[in-house]
Image (cartoon, rainbow, N blue to C red; front, top):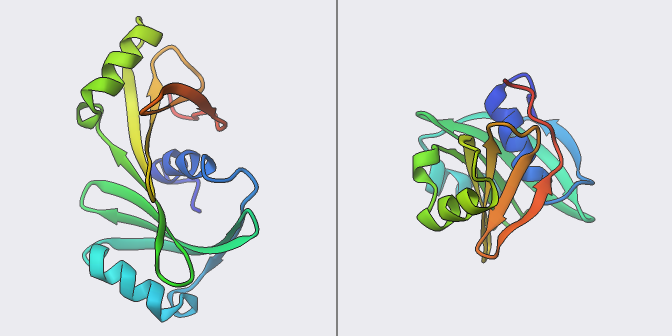
Length: 156
């Protein structure tokens, strides 16, 4: 993952929520299984792939596409059979659900959202926020503010 790219760093934090013990290896497009490429092209064919990686999370093999589609930065994690395991996308604070914003205002009354992302797993959606006045990113899902994402933000 290209951590010099601020969007990549931002989305890297999102993917850490999936597994803190991932083993990652950058690969070329020709090393990505055809079924994974077909699944990617079917949904994200217009996106530019910045990098493909082969990763091991919890002993399972995945392929990750780090992408940009217009202004949307997105990392998509695929199982070898082409099934999407996770999608992490940078979003604007205005795209956050009202329930997330309301919860944030209760938990962090003096904070404002500097940046946000949405992480979709098979059956859950989580939101990650970088808040003013906080060095840690905060994580929220439908149950509320239940975790911290364990990568510090480098940007001011």
